[in-house]
Amino acid sequence: MSLASLQMPLGVPGYQYETAAQMAEALAQRVADALRQALGERGRALLLVSGGRSPVALFERLAREPLSWKQVLVSLVDERWVAPSHPDSNEALVRRHLLQGAAAEACFVSLYQPAASHSQAADLAEARLAGLPPADVLLLGMGDDGHSASLFPGSPNLAEALREDCPRRLLPLRAPSAPVERLSLTLPPLRAARLALLAIQGQPKLATLARALQPGPAEALPIRALLRPPLQIHWCP
Image 1 (cartoon, one colour):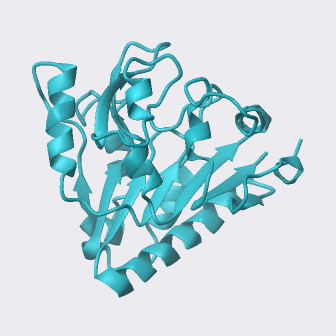
Image 2 (tube, helix red, strand yellow):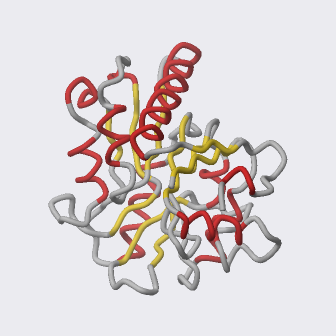
């Protein structure tokens, strides 16, 4: 199976690369160009990124792009409810691999908030996001189960998070297979991005994408809710 063999939604382009290094290079240039355009038009830019191991090479390549990083806001599409010192923290990963060199001048908006409960932490993170503009660039990944951000099949609050008219930017969610509580952006801010890039690698994720392109409920494969313009899909074996 190849990405070119899939029937993509109207207006959603797909790009295929031979190696992960080629994909990281192409994505870094695409992200940097979009950020430069936003800076030229509005004087600032918002970049929302995903955590995990997959985007590390992209982060390290993007950090070397000549940009007015002081005018760039960086935040996350989701976060585990753990302190930034925790090894599973997405914030720690972004600081270690993206916010380096000149890119360290970017302003990072943390989702993690210490609180008495998971729901209170989500309320505090929601307040931190208030007033942020729509993302100029959104970097998404996808799990083999079809989740993106922390929108996991079977998670409490998933139906609310996937509402097109969800009044919240962020909700407390959980990965049913993992004990760590999470904070995730909801569908409206994810859909509002001016440019959304979905980067996936390997045949298992391509097979998941193929299933998601078939009709069915978004609750079963949450990535379904995002497979529309302005999304671009980038894949390598």
